[in-house]
Image 1 (tube, rainbow, N blue to C red):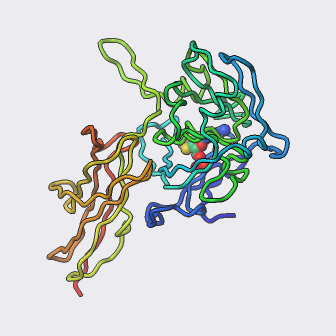
Image 2 (image 1 turned 90 degrees about the vertical axis):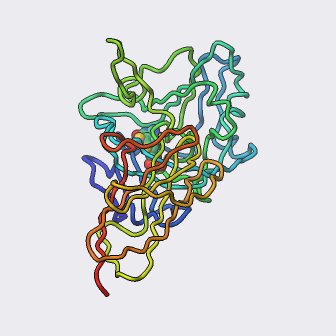
Length: 332
Ligand SMILES: Nc1nc2c(c(=O)[nH]1)N[C@H]1C(S)=C(S)[C@@H](COP(=O)(O)O)O[C@H]1N2
Ligand SMILES: [Mo]
């Protein structure tokens, strides 16, 4: 068993490598977090197929082998978990950067013919069961039809060049680049075209950020990823030596490209713009800053990303709140 597993009740449902292990642009598969809400379903890949129903011209079933026979596309994308559904304002920094390969969802939907009244695509996984005392008949997510028509939303068969294994959601899962990981339904068994959002527990009950405006509750689905950034070098609690130039380096990402990353070495009192690499597809972007501290002592390093629309990161109480580490500079 991997050393990153955190024990679940029945199954290991969460694996999360520490941020300091995410030093490479592409995250190797053994360092990509894993998350399952109710466990890993027992599935036999050879027999599996995906049923497409609802507001379609003809109900259609696509066998996994048919999917393998269709033209395959690749998309590079960051993959970020929105955090615990019951604690949505806690930042967990569960993130990776990977390459998915599979068939665009729109090519699969075209086989069934989407009717004009369809506004949402519901995707269902083969898993279901008890979640904190609530019976989940099946894991279901939804996404607006306009997003489903994007060429990079995929039925993925591979991640990082290898077939998806049973824990990763294989043989086939949905991947929605730019959306929080929760929307990328693993062990995909059904697609349902509907005029409304799904009533599922993980669609319209959990995973909706609620606020009150003029006495009315407004719920924002946890879909598009908000700007976020992490420092991977130096590592939290690392000892550095005075006089040697250090580099502060990390990753920034969001549904929209990141334009600016600011770094603070004094716990947020002052901020300096780092160099930010351009975005490739939906990948995370590297930022770096040369740093030559002039005195020994403890330093609090922070980073904050701002996207091309000017959206940034809150200081606290958000899944994308500003990331902070402490390092110690000692005399040589
Ligand atoms: N069927 C199914 N799909 C699922 C989940 C799940 O519990 N069941 N978890 C979601 C969540 S919350 C996340 S963050 C990602 C995790 O994908 P990974 O385990 O490949 O990293 O899968 C999503 N898809
Ligand atoms: Mo998640």
